[in-house]
Length: 290
Image 1 (cartoon, rainbow, N blue to C red):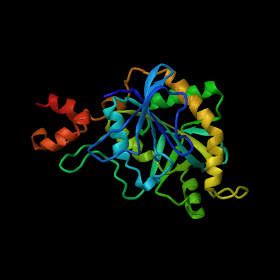
Image 2 (image 1 turned 120 degrees about the horizontal axis):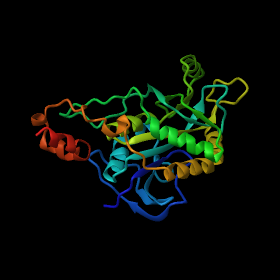
Image 3 (image 1 turned 180 degrees about the vertical axis):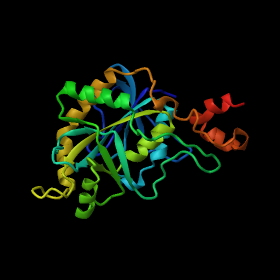
């Protein structure tokens, strides 16, 4: 199987990376079903990368129907150690303007019923998630953005809402009262699963609007989101390319060994099926416990 070290998840408005060279499409099967689409493998600034359109070709899959487990597990199968994610968000702060880019460092979960773990069905595991983004990769992404001249904000809290509807005014004001910075519909599950898969994860939150709280701005619409994302797409591409130039780095972060002490179930109580399904994640740790 073809391999890649860096994964790129493109969200609304970022559906492909035209800069990829030696492109090859790969379809993957996972124990969790089908990913959003084919992974596009190739070289970017001389590094092996894998690109996945989060919402599928033609933007067919809404946030609540995304198979996050299959998407992240697919990257693991490809050998990916770093994931750079791009997604549309609304601003919850006056000083975070449309067309700005936020590199968040925290989450608030407002989703309902989404599966956010590879564990269960006879295997219990727990990973640390106090700091949900890879701090090293996030800093590399921020530094790359500064070199490209992007309007950036380092750090901030991302509210992940269920959707697909946008916020009510009351909800938007509630999140502002909590001190949250941006709101979106996709990144939380990706970050949780990437941590379980021991993949470094960082995101570019591409600001498209002021949600619906801003008195002098119109409430968010799809047209406004797409228009601003299109304007920001070139900047996002430059940031991704500049970040990848500086990879890899020595993975001394908690992401690289998140599962080392996370598997709670005793090895002799883990079924053969579960061992085989999750071998890319847990195989090396089960061998140590024999």
